[in-house]
Image (cartoon, rainbow, N blue to C red; front, side):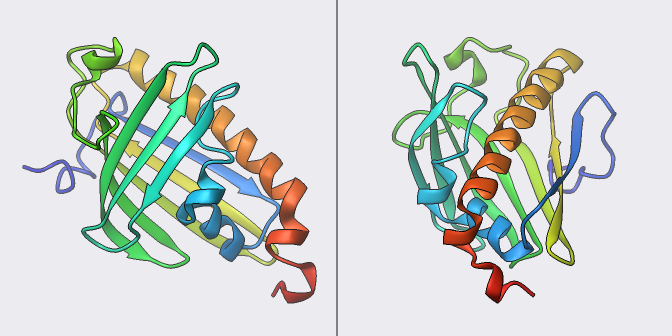
Amino acid sequence: MTLAANLYHVSAEEELTITRVFDAPRGLVWRTWTEPNLVKRWWGPMYFTSPFASIDLRVGGKYLLCMRSPEGRDFWSTGVYREIVPPERMVCSDSFADEKGNVVPASYYGLSPDYPLELLVRVTLEARRDITELTLRHTGFPNEAERNNAREGWRTSFDKLDELLSQHRGMLYPRTSRS
């Protein structure tokens, strides 16, 4: 059974679910996930930067992202978009990669050799007037410790996303066009 087919048959240890509300319209939140120049401004845990983002936003298209640690170490990830419903939902695979986009085992970055080569990410955006409820489901973690590490990374990434939305909402999505 593929990981995608197994999405609804995973243990709590294998799946991470995060729901976060952003004070921004859904269209703007969608853009921050799909436009490389915006992704680079929030991708990665706190104190990490994102010097590179490439997104081919179509079913079968790939992304390649880099996050750089405060010590200057680059961590690359890649995946393939499996479902895209703008601005509501996207589903994609998630793998560690090298700088050329080749999938590598997590052990390449010093993580558990038990980590699967591919995880699954599902992002759902629900519009609630001028705010957006984002639900992220990240599936396939090998153990609770790895899932909890990912939870902290996503939490601080979302803190950076929230800051980006707060600071630049007017420039990215003027209030006069919000509906």
